[in-house]
Length: 208
Image 1: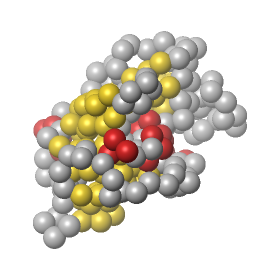
Image 2 (image 1 turned 30 degrees about the horizontal axis):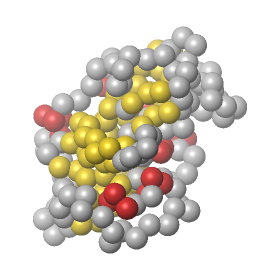
Image 3 (image 1 turned 90 degrees about the vertical axis):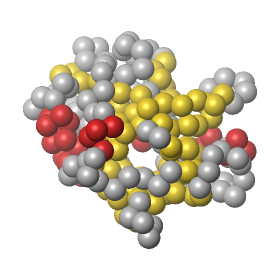
Image 4 (image 1 turned 120 degrees about the horizontal axis):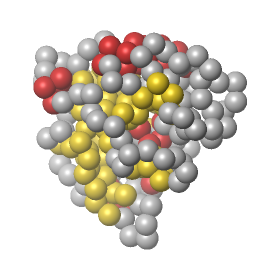
């Protein structure tokens, strides 16, 4: 399974025990009343061993760097699964609430049989702000279906799905139609995150 996504929801989702939905549970209206990420180039730090010169144009960053441009409710990034990098934009929402929840579409390939372009989720906590109150850094973690299973294999799925979560038959994933269930899962999942993940604003502008 491959989850190709901006922000390392692709990096953070290991392909097992993750919550996905056919339709988005949030719209941009759900961002109201909470600080927004500062628009511009961001780095989603999924690989601590990844060396990158953040002063270079995004197209020159290695794939491990997790770079994306956040602007106008979209996340733009270079899709590198084919020969030449292809500029790609996908809807990205950072919903208000406690915890905040990032929602983004993913591209699924491999053996996972799901509808095209499902939505994946991560809990998020802002850790830095600029002088105008815009978020310039946050930590994040995958929203999981329930307590992680003992095995971490590609087919691993929780043995105790959280309330409101329905396990996808034959797949290491679950789904829900409930925002409340998703948010409760996000709260619980923070303690299950295998390692700290973070994102930080790099500079204004686009990928150049």
